[in-house]
Length: 323
Ligand code: FUB
Image 1 (cartoon, rainbow, N blue to C red):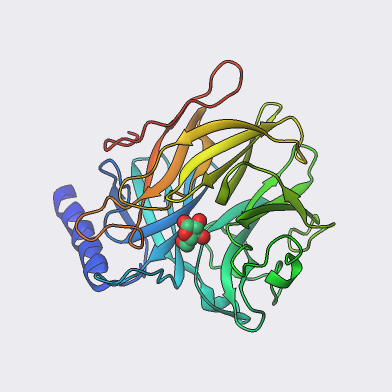
Image 2 (image 1 turned 60 degrees about the vertical axis):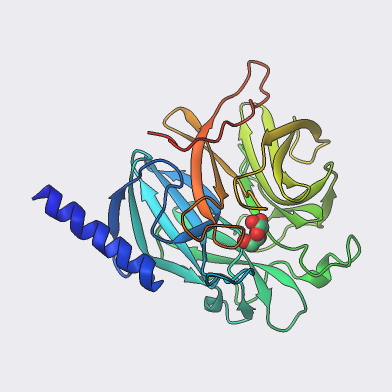
C-alpha cells in the first residue's frame, strides 16, 4: 500500500515538474540527498524553524531551457519535521500579490512574531524604478500570505545616496534580537540595515550602510550565544563569506570564506538555521539534471559546525545532504 502511495506521490511530483505546475495541495516526499527538491527548480532559500519543523521558503526558478535569465513569478514553501520527509504546500505568495509590484519573486525570508508570520521579499517595483522590498503577513507559516502594507517597505529612491544602481534593495534578512528589537538587513553591492518597529512592517529609524569586504549580495543575519553573524555572497561568481560582531550595529569583523562556489551556479544564496540542536547551511546550486544552472537552481542542505571560539567552519557541500 505504501509503495503505491509513494508511486502516486512521485507521479504527482513528476507531472508537476514536467508541466511546470505549482503545487495545488500538500505533497509529501522523502529527500534523496542534494538537491533536496528535484521536481522543480528552487532558489534563494530562506529557512525558519518553528514548532519542531523546518520551513524553507524559496523562489521558483522558471526559466525555460536554452534561456539564461531570471524568470521568477512566485515563491514556494516546504516543511519538514526531520529534514528528510518534506511536504510542499500550495504556493503561498506570488510577486503579483503585491499590487505595486511588476514581478520578479527574488530572495526572501520569513520570521515569526507573536503568532504572525512576516515574509520579507524583493520584487521589481511597478512605478518607482528598481527593486524594492515588500512584506507579507499570515497567521500560518504556510500561508496564504497577503501584502501587509499595500506599499513597499524599502524602495530604490531611499538608498541612492549610497549607490546609483537600481537593484541594490534586494535580499532582505531579518532578526528579532533577545531584547525584542527587530532589524532588517539587505543589499546588493552595498549592504544596509535598519531597525523595524514592533509591528514589523515599518522602519524605525534611518537606513544605515554596513561595511563588509567584497560584498555582492545575499546577507543573512543570525545570532548564536553573544555573537552576531552576518554571512553574505562575495564577488562573482559567488562564494559565501561572513563577519562576526558582538553588536547588531557592528563593527563587523571579517572571518573569511564560509562556502566555496556552488556547483554550476554563479550565485550561492545561503540561510543558516539551528534545528533540534544542530546547525544547517541551506543554499542553492545549479546541479540538478538535466537543465540545472545559474537560472535553474536547486536548494541544498549541509551541516554547519562552529569552532570553540565561535567562528564557523567552512561548509562541506555534499551530494548526500543531511539525513
Ligand atoms: O534570485 C535572484 C537573485 O539571485 C537573488 O536575489 C540573489 O541573491 C541571487 O541569488
